Amino acid sequence: MDSSILEKYASADGLVIGVTFFDNRLISAKQQAKIYALLDEITFHTASEEMDFRNKRYGIEFKQEREHIKMALKSSFCNYINIQPFSLANLNQTTAKEFIHYILEFCFRFDIPFHDKWTNLTEDITYFLYLCIKYRKCSITGQSGEIHHVDAIGQGRDRKIYDHTQSRLICLSREMHSKAHQIGWAKFKRLYHLDGIYLNPAQVKECHL
Image (cartoon, rainbow, N blue to C red; front, side, top):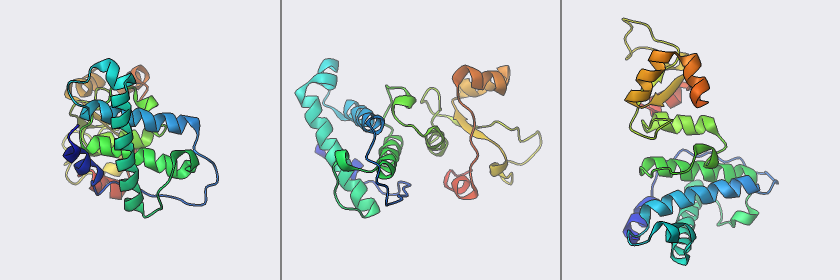
């Protein structure tokens, strides 16, 4: 793996983070699994092309690359929120959740493709859907997407002055967007087990709506 790629990734700024301290609950097994699932996705994307799929998942070289990435992201995360270096084994659940958010947004920012199901990558579906909107990624396919207003704006209304906090939003590819209109939202959300989310004014601005 090109170390300059990792350095660029690890030095990323602007990720949305907020940590609540004084949580004495140790990181859960599910949180540990999600962190490593995300690290796997990054390692798959940045690993040397000569590594075959089996080596990527099971080989020593893959594990070494993943450890390198983990250390870089931990360091970047600590610097960003101004905390001391930590071991995952001793991390509290609140900070673990924020670290998962940090890695997840890192993946969105640098266009890391997801091979695993989103349910294996985060326990916070609302945050996942928010990032899909922010980075214009389809919540279902991962392709480039466009914003779908679940609660219709209405014909003739100017989207530039519309209050986007008043509608549930979701990012969908052109194909999925058309399908949502064709079959109706009630059927669509049952089919894909996803619904739109409400954004607050700050989020609307951050998502350039």
